[in-house]
Length: 634
Image (tube, rainbow, N blue to C red; front, side, top):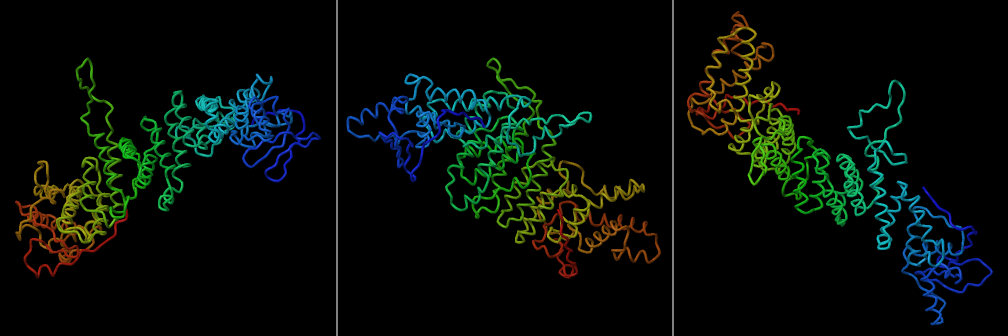
């Protein structure tokens, strides 16, 4: 820290109690200066020789026969006046970044100009500020911090502007030219993490990171911080990602800390709200300059602090353009009231809508040229990778919010349907979310279960998910049959390719409907079919059990799960031949019942029974064993 010493005489100012200051000399004092509760017993001559204001005040007090002069409105108070008084006496006084501005404002108040005495205090302080303080990084920040308590004097003297320009200029220079100390307690920016500090075995000089200045500036109050950052941006030499990092550091220091506790305890958050709104205003417009996670934290804070709609809408739009960079914990924004559930799902739906609208254009853009609207191809289209990432993100998010007992099924379905089907390569995460919702909401009606499960495409489930679904008693019966069917088709195709089992493959595929936009095998078509009470429309429970046993036997390497296969094997037939025959015989029987004509039936609303909805035989229902349950681990 820079400092300057003025004067050469020893300091003989003394204190009596907490409110009396005097000069220990043989000469009697002849003037009293009152500043609030503090009184200075001094001599007129040294003071009046350097201060025009004191000359006028003493002259007026002499007319009233009063030796006391009151200057309680002096900026900086008694401590700043004491510095000026010591300078008048020629005593040694040390100026530094912490007291120089107060002394400068007090000298201005006392009118200690060059016209009164050459080499007066104002001149000496201005030289110190220009030659030392404004050239020093941390001293400039300290002085800028002290300006707030000295308004409007510090503003009128242009000290604030000089400090801001000095700080912004240093923050904008090439990092390789930084030769002063700074505070840096974070990891470097991602773009700089790969820089090796060694070259051919010789240790290179430590590189200064591009964001070296952001922590020091986070010490400033928001009004000053905003002015500094706007000046830095105006200079145009600082990358947007560094501006974004500066705002992130400031937000974590000044906004996010104990925010939820402050709101829940009813503490006045006006100051925090102003900080949030200023940060949103200062966010750089360049995409990728701030992370999606940081934007979501700002959005969460905006909801907690009840900021204006314009700020929340601004954040929603920005998040929507880079939603693929978010994580599930970032999306778990609490609801504003318990009546609306645990999480603010409506806000996430608005973000997803922004993402989809941003990515669902026709690959064209328009611009106006010579009063004519011209449409051209838009090459900067969004990659499919982003859509795949968002689909996976939303499915995982659905798995979290499914645990909310107050989440309406229609809202769950609406959010799931916002993601296009082509963006979901696999439906395992979606199945996990649906299963979790069924578990937490056991009172769903038959139609609600049908529509919920209609979100899932059984053809896109992995083998592990299929095995879980087959044994999941929460799923409707038709969904289980579909899972069994498509898994069996998959196994049959694999067997046909390896064993050249053309007969089995043709028998299975001949029963599938032709591709006409919708397949009877898809879960969505099953969810929208009308129910007809025809006993031949669905397989019997014995068919289901035989089919499931055959599927489990397949996965277990041919173990004897089915009573039919056990009896046949006891007769001495070849095991592989028997299994193949069972597949060929059972598949047409079941599939002809499932997908013959329009015989589609609804599922039972109870998840504890395997009753075939198309069966009218109660004895058949009683003989049906319930499905075993196995928890899915996500």
